[in-house]
Length: 612
Image (cartoon, rainbow, N blue to C red; front, top):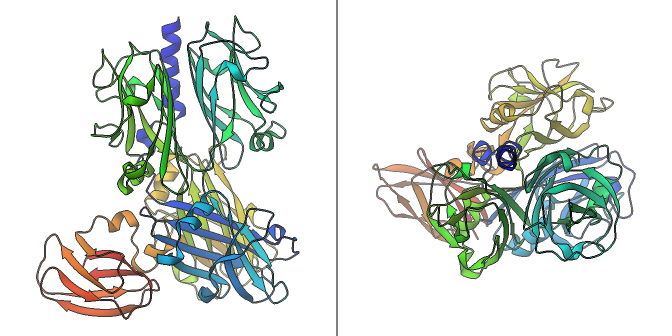
C-alpha cells in the first residue's frame, strides 16, 4: 500500500509541477519588471483620470535595462518622469531621470553603464523603486506605480518540532515550497518530510503568527501521498488568505498518530530575492531510475546576484547520500557538474551557499534559463537516484506596442498605446496590462487574436469587458487563467512564444481594429528596430570587443565572407555610422557617439554593443 502511495506521489509531483521539460524552452535569461501607474499610489493620493503601464526588462548579463512606459488619460502634459527610491506608501528621491525620453506622454529608454547600478537592480527586485509622472498641477506626481518583479509569490517553509506550540521532541524534518499565483487565487505546493514517528495522518495550513496556534484555513490532507504533500489549492475563497500570508501569519502543520496536534510545523516565509525550486524524482534521471524516493529543493539568488542559497529535503532513498551536485544541462539530458554540494549533505538534507567567484555570470544565466539540475547519488545509483530540474518562479515577459500601421490593412490614426503580458512558468496564467489613448472614439471591442504580424486571425481571448469603454483613452488590467472559458494553457503559450498573438483594439470608426500590437517576447529595445530577441542575437557568429566600450570596438567573425558594409544603429533605429570592411578583426571607432546601446549590423550578422 505504501509503495503504491509513493508511486502515486511521484506521478502527482511531476504532473502538478507540469514537469521541467514542458516549460524549459518557455523561460529565457531576462527578468521582467512592471508597474501599474495611477493616482491612488501617490503619497498623498491624487484624484486623476490618468493611468499607465511601465515595463522594464533586464537582460541576462544585467548590463542593459529596457524601459517602456505608456500613459493614458493624464489630463495635462507630463512635465517630468522619474524612477524614485522608496517602497510603496513612502516618497523618495530621484534615482533615474527619464524626462528626456518623453514623447507624447510615453517613454522608451535604455539604461546602461553608470545609469544602471547594481543597487538600482537590487532595489527593483526587492520592491524599493517606483516610477512617477509629474504634471504642472501635480508637481510631486500625478500617477505613480511601484516597480515589481513579474513573478508568482514564492513562499518557503522549513519544518521541525521546535516550531510546534508546545514544542515537540522529534528528529523529523521537512521542507515546503509554496508558490501563490500572481492573481493570488491558486497556491501550488510541494512538501517533503523525513524521519516522522509514523505515517502522516493530516496536514493543514493554519492562520497564526510564529509561536501561536491558529485555526485551519486550508486542508492539505487529501493531497498526502506517503511522506509527500503535493497539490494546488484554490485559495480565492479563503477570506484574507493572501494578506495573512504576506503578514507571515500562515503555517503548515503535519500530524502523526503519536502527535495528533502536530509533529512538525513551519511558518511560510516570503522569498523577496530571485526564487527557484524543483521536485526530485527518479523519473527525471537519464535514463530514468525506478525508485520510491522523492524530494524538494529551493534555491534563492540574492538581489545583488552575489550569493546563491539552496536547501533540499529528500526521503525514501535506497541508502545514504554519497554525493550531490548541481549539473548544467536542460531537462532530458545529462550535463557536467558545475557545483559540488557533497560537503553540504547532512543526512537527508542538503543545504548551503554558493558565493564569491563561484557565482559566475554563466551560472546565473543557466539558472535563469532552467538549465541547472540537482542530482542526488547513492551507492545503488552512482549516476544519480533522484534529480530535479531547477526552475525560476519569475515569469516570462512579452511586450506590446499598439499602433495603426500594424493593422492589416494599416489604419491612419493618432491612437497609440502599449503594455505587457507575462506568463507563469506553468503556462496556465497570463498577466495583462494595456493602456491606449487618442482613439477616434470609445472602444467597441478588444481582443487577443491568433496570427503573425502582417496577417489577420481569429479571436483567442476576449478583453472587451476589461475596458471601461467610456472615453477615447482606456486601460485593461487582468489575468487570463486556465479556468477561463477561453483557457490560458500550454497551447496558447506556444502561440505567444512563436509571436503568433496580437492585441487588437476596435472602435466604431474602425470596426476591424484601429490599433494593433504584436505580442513579442522580451523587451521592445531589440524588437523595435531589428525585430530580434536576445536569444536570436546570441545565435549570430559576429562578436564585438571590448564590450562595453568607451571608444573603439573590434569586430570578429567566425567566418569572414569578404568585403561587406557595417552599420551602427542606435536604439531608435537610426543608422549613425557606416563603414566598409575588407578583413576580419576590423576596428570601428565609436568614441564620438553618446553613451547607450547600439546594434552592429554586418549583412545578416548582428550584435549588441554598449557604449559607456
